[in-house]
Image: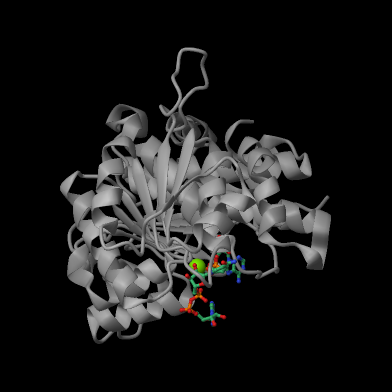
Length: 370
Ligand SMILES: NC(=O)C1=CN([C@@H]2O[C@H](COP(=O)(O)OP(=O)(O)OC[C@H]3O[C@@H](n4cnc5c(N)ncnc54)[C@H](O)[C@@H]3O)[C@@H](O)[C@H]2O)[C@@H](O)CC1
Ligand SMILES: Nc1ncnc2c1ncn2[C@@H]1O[C@H](COP(=O)(O)OP(=O)(O)OP(=O)(O)O)[C@@H](O)[C@H]1O
Ligand SMILES: [Mg+2]
């Protein structure tokens, strides 16, 4: 089998801010290089599994132009990425591997919060809550008995209700299926303030990003926030925050937005996912599929919620000083794209997000546990 397509399949690029290509891994200092290498090897290993090529052949081909990175370094750093995944043991209690809250779900959109919350469970969280409107709650509940659903988001005491749960949650995913009703958005403002006051990490997606575009100060400088805009959401945010987004590459644009927001982590989804914390810029171009059905971003945001919790819990000795949120983002992007790839192989044109969710377990295993 030709090796070219293998590299395309595992085509993750990890670029330092001052460097234009994969060769740019060389100037990345210390932890940055470690992170970049780790994720590269994770994805290469995934390609290996998929195409059953010897690891050496894949790595030699992929890195032959970049001698600075020995294969051994790559193998060592792969362990770093895997390190953030908590081991499964019989000693744990329910909830320890993640209690995730999804804030979203209204009359029009019940699928999005379901996709995010169930994806969090499928990745490995123990409990997944959805805070949605009263009308949406029975619908979301009916999709799955595994979700805990709170019909509070349109209540006058919504903030108080959610605040009561915050001490029992590790991460909030805010926005899937939220809609743009002003009353709801006002409640979500209060919920975000309460989460920040408790230092709870937040993943902001979909209509949560609409809110941030209107009120960027809400998250300004909050280093435990990750934004996951699609193409349109990214442009909206850039216009709102930067006024003059200017020209330049995708990577520069993402890095500039992150910096302008005080180094919150930004994940711009697209043909390639571009991730930045304002200091480093990474790209994930693992082969997904050409299917663009709705809900794939919701899967990503739910998965990211869990990985953010795990990465922050892992501590610097496990991540070797690399940004935990960048690690989490690379993990979630790779996983979503791998799910898409696997689902498309089975279902082709009829692939939907439900098919991708069925692939979360096998895709996770292929990427991170083999
Ligand atoms: N089953 C469901 O309940 C779903 C609900 N969703 C919810 O729908 C609401 C609106 O989300 P939208 O993503 O539609 O956001 P917007 O309402 O901002 O719409 C974005 C528009 O841009 C288009 N677009 C997206 N990516 C593009 C690209 N790369 N280039 C050009 N155009 C592009 C889309 O077709 C859409 O019309 C959110 O609350 C979201 O969570 C979505 O998550 C999809 C699934
Ligand atoms: N052109 C593309 N080629 C390959 N993968 C893509 C492409 N565009 C998006 N993706 C992948 O699809 C996933 C979701 O991204 P997308 O841009 O569809 O989000 P979204 O619009 O927020 O989705 P949702 O419908 O859930 O709101 C991401 O993992 C991203 O990497
Ligand atoms: Mg979306």
